[in-house]
Image (cartoon, rainbow, N blue to C red; front, top):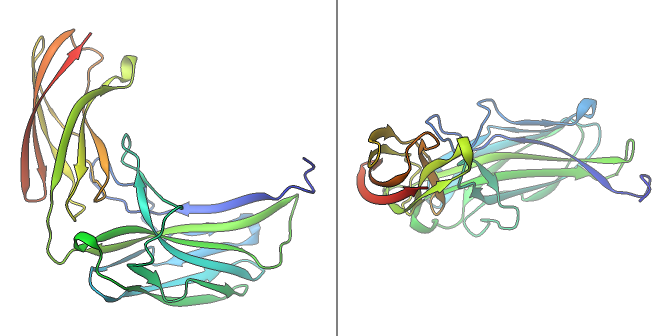
Length: 267
């Protein structure tokens, strides 16, 4: 396809998402407010990068969106659920879904002239299920008058956070199976944990391992978005002897404690 005919898109994106400062964080977040830029042509900024409030109907907070390009942008603001990577714990917005029935910006689509800002509110329309909601705030902008440079039409996407914390906290986890993942020197014992509560309380604890070798290890803390499952890492098993092992996991999530006994085999 000829370059002149192609509609190549340059996405200027900064993902500043729900970071937690313990162990396996929800995402690798920049502590600064997110700013999206495309070279010298400017970009889009969002401040603050996090809207946080109690999950109840009404206004949750304000954000300001600024267009630092030299042209008018057509903007779209959408609250989207997180998708969480089970292996890393990192999150990314699910662009196929939205949470508009529960929370939305006061203006979801509008035009923003060059070097202008728009302040808007984030409002809770209905109390979220289970009494909390942790989501991505996607701000997407594209040129009204498309001007391609070198065959590239820039678009701008920046992602902030919406945290609607529960009025009544109910930490709760479902403990799944223990498995070995990875190969060679990267082979690791993990425990599947699903957050079925309504908080972001991290899951942490210890694993007591008995068998051909005996070990007690600290689990890598994991912050799990409600409704999501993460593989909590126990230890690298590449240097352990072959055989059957028994593991007792002692877990803590907020005010709750769990004990789970599992068996795995090294061959």
